[in-house]
Amino acid sequence: MFNIIFRIKNDIVFIISLMYLCLAMGIILGQVDYLSFYYVEFTLSNYIIVSTSMLRIFILIIAISSNNKLRNLLTHNKIASILFIIVYSILFGFLENRLNTVSIYESSKFFIMYNLFLMVVYIICSFKLVLKGIKEKEYLFVVLSASILMLAIKAAYAIYGANRISFNVKLTSVSLTYIFSLIVIAGGFIELYMYIQRTKVLNDKLSIFYNLSDRNMHSFMFICDENEDILYANKKLKENYCGTDNVDMHKLNSILKDKINSLDNKDEIIKFVNENGGWRGIVKNEKYNKTIDCSVQLINTAEGYKAIAATYMDISDEISLELELEKFKVYDKEKNEFISNISHELRTPLNIFYSTVQLLDRMSENEDLDFKLMYEKYKKPLHVNCKRMLRLINNVMDISNIDTGILKPNFGNYDIVSISEDITLSVVNYALLKSINIQFDTNVEEHTIKCDPTMIERVLLNLLSNAIKFSKQNKNIYVDLTVKEKWVQIEVKDEGIGINDNVKHIIFDKFVQVDKSFTRMNEGSGIGLSIVKSMIDLHNGNITVDSEVNVGSIFKIQLPNECLNDSYYETYNINNSNIELELSDIYEVVT
Image (cartoon, rainbow, N blue to C red; front, side, top):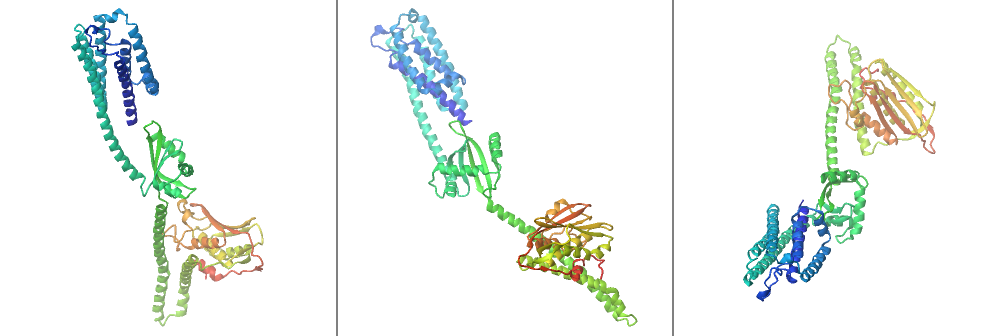
């Protein structure tokens, strides 16, 4: 808006200046107030040249009128306009002087009417200029209004002296012309002084802006045009991308264009800026792995074209630190929950131990009872809970050994079909306690791969144990092994309670258990699946889950279909004690 007002002000001042130029040419060429010291030459005809006077009036009317084509024509062709005024004043002044035979010019009536016309026009123009000056708080318009008002007074005085032609009248008329000129000159000096003061204030503000932007130690700043050509860049930006403050702008322009074009949402930002005048937000730069806090502002220059100012900070380190801190908080929370859960898991078998021991101690004091029969009655829960505690401690040690890199696979070439089938069949009796049917299927009878059989056993037993625990009675569990070109895939499918979509992505994390309450239906420490994933990762395989609540879950294991070179085929026998440990948290365990 300021640029528009400034441009209109300049246009009006320029056009009024053309009027002053025309008047000055008239005075120089003797077309206005021609003064001779011979009394006989005091006539009406040599008072004014009408053709150039009409040109001045025409120019003044254009100046005070609303924006129009003639004003645009004059302001867009300034040199041509000045030359036209000079040539017109000389040519028409000369012709009117040479052809001064029109009798109407000699009449007092024409003289009075013409000056009355001039007076009215000058008063109207003066009034409009002073209103514009007050409205826009422009001192220069008031000065121009005062000078034009002097021309109106001069025209009124000319009417007064039309029938009183004398040296004194003519001298007074000339004096009014020069008072008009002095007002313009004085106003010009005052405007010059005010311009100098404004320039000083502007330079002070520019110095502040320079120190704020160019010496900014925290933010990168640059200004570019609509074609993304850099117009300005601060010192921090130059030194960051070019290593020095004294840099070739073409080189910097090329670097910044590459950075801008690599932004993920560049087009959206530019569209938003053009529609709303500015944009503020976080920008992701995947190409350079940067996170930027950016502010973009549309600005209008004094020349009338648009430019874009951008200020940004690289907050990648801060974001990374915040993410690490948040991750640590989550990890710490999960660890505390895990410790609480472990305490609960340990307390349950310990309470059973303590209660059973107390009972046996009391029974041992009764000589009438057969202590052996009593022990036989209660030894089952003692065995079960011993195994539960041992399983829990083993899991805690394994997760620690995996984190520290102590636990490593002992690879050999084994028949994965035989191992998987034997493990599946070994838990059939445990599943039958809940009337759950387990089926094993494979697309090959034998297939040898590189693996650690004890880890594969742990993995499958954990998945089968979970499938049994989280399935209701009279359901099915399916274990399918499929040999493919690059992978050996083992699927463990159940018809259990399933897993919610919002927790699927965390079930393989450490210390995570979907149901963390102490009143949950099934026991568990929440680290079993984390160990499963870690052991599969040690095989360079992967494990995924596909689950639907109240329908069931499918755990898919993929192991690389490859063998060790220069290694013989080995056999592996299922360890029954491992089976008892892994399924010890199924309370109806068979002993």
